[in-house]
Length: 422
Ligand code: ASP
Ligand code: MG
Image (cartoon, rainbow, N blue to C red; front, side, top):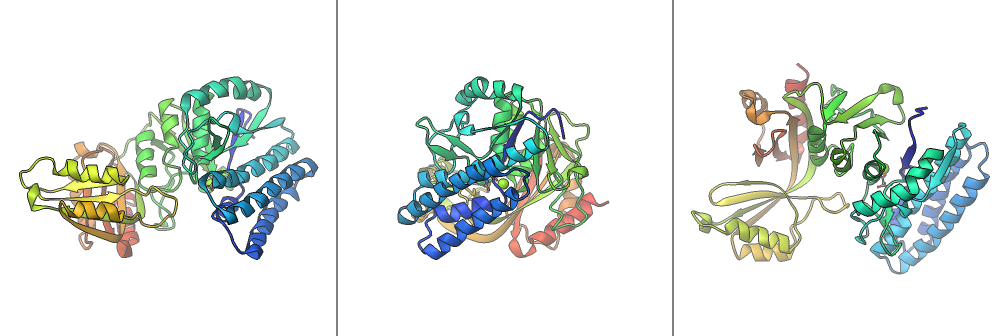
């Protein structure tokens, strides 16, 4: 209903990518494989059934489902990351056929566009990096002219490398795609219609009194995305920030509820804006008496971590020890592991302690480093909690710490009541 919308980037239908990922991992049991394929057909049929004229969209969807069937069979013999990307891309390729027809039936001229012609990436299947210069050039040649004629419907999440292989940007990557495309076509705004009516002061499932935030700055929103608020893919804001494109987040199911605008300049910059919770944290503590007055210890530690491709998230140090948390780099959702080879090498240097079942609580706000007195309020509220690693000072926008998983929700609830419900 917004006449300013020129380009729509769509994700797959709900549940589809998960099923495709399962197939891509290789389903040996043929009966189970057919069950998944039937489920995929059902999800798409449910939408096709609601179209006035589904002939063309149905034909297109069924052709893609045939491809899914043969790729699933290939994956059951030998799975690979390249094959996975080809297979999981089918979700967005199908949903965009449905959406194009649906929009046409609402009386709007719409064209479906295969974004693989524009969204050029490297060949890192499963988590491909976009190649910005090529994307901009290709968008100028192929996408912008098309947007002038009709509304263009295209796929999120997927792209292609220089050889024309299908790639994906990682789970949840549709938001990121939309932002990359908005940047490439120099859009005046980017709206993300998801399943929540915007960004809240914290997850309302944890604190029922959490309230919607009408407007938030890029820096605050990036901190929230990085600290686990699962509303936006963490990379989404990067292209929008680069080109200063305002981003709106709202619910496609309840558009009338409004949402959150994320902008460069915002009217208010409160000390406390939101609370985020991220569980499945792995904390590694390294201790060495040799660190005392020594130099080069941290350099050695990070050299070993880099060699084993261990990505570090937070870090605090004391004279003879350093604690760090490991970054979640894969899509498994489980706690990140310290690779055994890295542990062995680190143990030659210092003692190594690994702890699991920890959650990261992040308090997001503004000018924290320049404000006084609030630490007492924050830590006073948490006096009954055992706080592990505390990180503060490197960013004016956050203060965060680890607590045991069993009390993490309680910590959020207490802080929310004290800092946001007053
Ligand atoms: N369909 C993809 C996924 O489920 C991308 C997305 O939804 O953003 O991960
Ligand atoms: Mg999605």
